[in-house]
Length: 315
Image 1 (cartoon, rainbow, N blue to C red):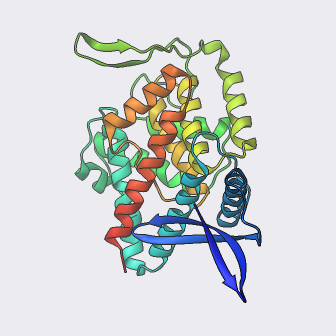
Image 2 (image 1 turned 135 degrees about the vertical axis):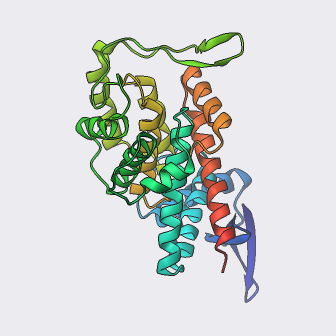
């Protein structure tokens, strides 16, 4: 943030400039602040107000921010615009290739992150095919169907959550696909001294509370005015803490995180591509009862993956 002076006919005019870098390109926003040089404290206040104006202009609506700064939100919105511009400039064939490749990669990663025994060839074979599939291909097909579903802008309610869970868990025996769990579950992280993992410092709620908690989650999701990055991260965080299902909870969380972003014009985010960092940010957030780490990780991954796309498809 910089104060700039412009002299016209011997008279000074003051402007506040805010500059952001997106994929090696600078974007500057300027605001006229008067003919009298503002005090330092006033500059800070004007700057915060100006940032809110920029966010509203870029987003076309007002967003709240609690976990990420206004500067980072502006940068995220600029990255979104840069992605849209770069994507729209691609040929039809290249657009299709990106959509297919990103969907296949997300599907593979989100399954293997949970130790599901599928490979790239399984997902590729399952994509767009309706022939008889083996088990690994069918599991891949189910997740591919779920990814296509979140691109269709369905209303998020309890029914949709159950349908999405049923879609991805149908071929997992004993995992009660599409049904709320009816037993207590425990969350573990890898530990060399504990073969089954070490229980983290958080235990999901009793199953008798789940229906009310899911209803509360759905209401929050509908009413919150948080920006898309924070809303996506908090949706993941809140749903994971509820842990509504016997299994497949993180997979559902990653789908809902992406549904939130896709609904707001952001690209598909392969949030678990950096598996260890993803897990650590999630566990840290859950144990400390604050989603800040997960929100920051989500933002960083969005920047990193979008930069890769922009670099690859630079004009």
